[in-house]
Every structure is written in C-alpha cells, then in structure tokens.
Amino acid sequence: MTVSEFQEEKESLARRETLAIRISNLANMLLFAAKVYASVKSGSLAIIASTLDSLLDLLSGFILWFTAFSMQIPNPYQYPIGKKRMQPLGILVFASVMATLGLQIILESLRTLVSNAIRHIDTVRAYTFGSHYFVEVDIVLPSDMPLQTAHDIGESLQEKLELLPEIERAFVHLDYEYSHKPEHACTHL
Image 1 (spheres, helix red, strand yellow):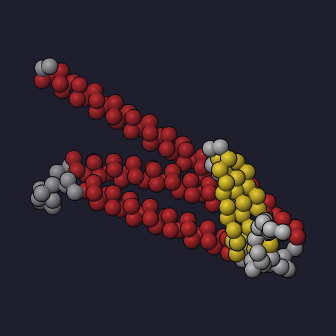
Image 2: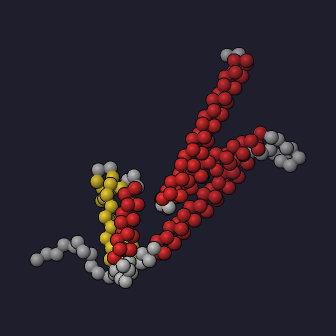
Image 3: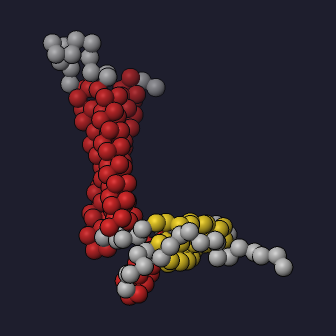
C-alpha cells in the first residue's frame, strides 16, 4: 500500500465516521423531540425520565464533539502540554450533569408520590411470568379520601406500571392502614 492509498483510506474512514456521527445525532434529536411531545402529553415520570435520557445522549455527543474539536486546535501559550486532557474533563462534566438530572428525577418522583396523599407503599412484589413480570403493589391512602379519587389513583398507578416493557400485568391494592397482617397468608387448621 502506497502512502497515497493509505491517505485515501484514512480520509474515507474519517468521512464514514463523520457520516455515522451525524446520522446518530439526527436520530437522537428526532427521538428527543418525540419524547418531549410524549412527556408533555402524558405527564408520566417514566416518559420524562426517558426524555432526559435522550437529552443526555445528545449532551454527551455534543461534549465529546466539543472536546475532540478543542483538542485539534493547538494553543501552546495557553496549553503548553496540549489539550489531551480535555476529553476526561468533558466526561467529568457530563457525569456531573447526569448525576444532577438523576437526582432531580428521584426528588420529583418522591414529591409526586407524596403529593398524590399516597401515605405509604406497603408491599411491592414481582413474580416472573416468562420473560415478563406480574407485579403486586399495596399502597396506603388517607382513610377519608373519596372512593372515586382513590380508584383513580390506583388505576393510574396500574396503567403506568403496565406501560413498562418488562411488566405483563400489574395489580394495585388500596388500603387505609398498613399495620395489618398480610392478607394472603396461609393458615393451618
């Protein structure tokens, strides 16, 4: 292989890599836009979390692109040993943003649970059903809550659980206290 052929192969590889990165970024942008729409329409925290995950994909691509771009422009006066350490710095910034967004999702989930007067999550059980799960959730609501409101909360939780791809079926039990014995315990006569 001659130097000219090697150079052509290297440039061809660089063009294919650039094309793959652009296609990936475009797909991530379209996916992000679709998830933003779904988040606004549904208000589901699971979809919002997925939307933030797509945002993080875009952000990580941008950070890696920016650090690679920055590393290519030498500045011996400001960076006498070069910019090779820009990439780990970009990864550190991305990890910090990701941790902050993850913590925010957890806090928002807890706030939503508390504000929707779910007083206590008594029991959560998951049973394998082939490659999926049957899930049982027992939640405690205020004893003075109207039946219609309690029903709507239970049904909403069931529907949100069943939207998860791993869940085949969800069963939600509503109660007003959690100091009782398990309801399905076996008794021997």
